[in-house]
Image 1: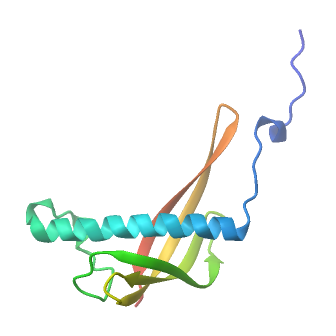
Image 2: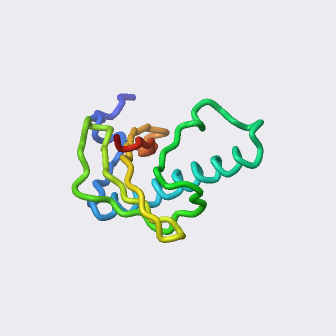
Length: 128
């Protein structure tokens, strides 16, 4: 019995997402990660024994912020590499304060049992 002739393109299919769909997904990812960051900062203040080295970085210039109300991306995303996109991000907090940071979105793809999965990770930088 002969193996069928299968090219690499036949092993998985990949859908190209529109930028609007991608931007919506990035907004959700950035919002969740930034809220996690704020929650960690609150926990550190309440329980200093939980301090980890990477938690000491002050990301926002605003003090005592607790809740993110809205995220807005400013301008066009800058593609640094095939897998890294840098976006200037405006963060609106629940108490009408606004701060601006840099969001770095790293994407990677993995093929599992012939299905291609795309994962994204967000990291942040303070604007200098």
